[in-house]
Image (cartoon, rainbow, N blue to C red; front, side, top):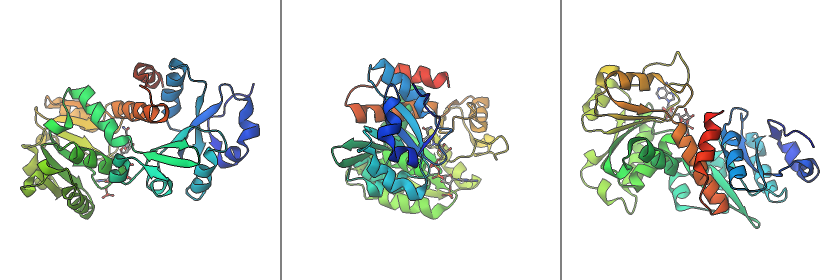
Amino acid sequence: MPTPKDVYTLSDLRNWTSLGKDLKPPARLAVFGDPVEHSLSPQMHNPALRAADIDCQYIRLQIKADELVEALRTLGKAGFIGTNVTIPHKSRVFAEVDEMTEVARRIGAVNTVLVSGDKLLGHNTDGPGLKRAVREEFSLDLEDMRVMILGAGGGAGRAASVQCAMDQCERLVLVNRTVEKAEMLAEELRNLDDNTRLEGPAARLEAIPWNANAIEKELGQIDLIVNCTNIGMNPVDPELIPQRLLQPHHLIYDMVYSPPRTRLMAAAESVGAKATNGMSMLLWQGALAFEFWFSREAPVEAMRRGLMQS
Ligand code: NAP
């Protein structure tokens, strides 16, 4: 029996009927990305598939931007149930799926695809994954919090912001280095049909530039700060928010999970604030993807153990 490769390619996918037939269990789920070798998704999904007694394994597929459409359209013929998509494909897949969930439509990106007959159904579990992670980490719901999103103009920041608006959080402050992106998003969120709690005084939904003065003015009226930038992944990264601005009542959700204790988390903890990394969001966005593929509850603890061992 062949040993599964760490990373497969489009050329492998094209020949999947012959290449994949000897894999036991058969590979029927994948993550598409470029690069993709760092993805922890197999470590999370393969234990889940075993725990749920589903005869299937999850693999990594290195798919370049110009290969994406062919790769998506090959999935069904190759016998795949679906796929996750990561950098740089989430926006492009949005344009390629045949149908999508409401949350994916609002976020404007797809990170999970289900093959259904000859159709591709898209979903986005990043926003819902953050929601579940925040509940697990802080025992609070987004709807009960005043939230500041750092990096609202990126893909993860947009997903987080849309989720907060859909959940009608108490207050939403969007911060982005390129402030125009945050302003455009704020405008869009003000127009969400069911967003009654965020309509009203402008201060309940604001876009502000990335500078210490503007951030300082808001922080007294903020409960949850979510870092959606990639700052914190590198040991030489700058300070995200000056430590003197953080207060003991703040809850910090840092989407970065490598390193496990980021500079922002250390700064928050030093002033007595509660802080956590993005591992729980990775877990819950994966669990929600599993539920989208199989219409059954995900074995979350098996997934958590898989991630902890990775
Ligand atoms: P992205 O689309 O490239 O967005 C990056 C964001 O960071 C943008 O808002 C960008 O601002 C901002 N940014 C980058 N460098 C900056 C700097 N030096 N100063 C201030 N802002 C800066 O990336 P993404 O896909 O959203 O991912 C962002 C992070 O979230 C990554 O670390 C990723 O690993 C993490 N993430 C984690 C999970 C999880 O499950 N835990 C899920 C998704 C993403 P501009 O708009 O001004 O460029």
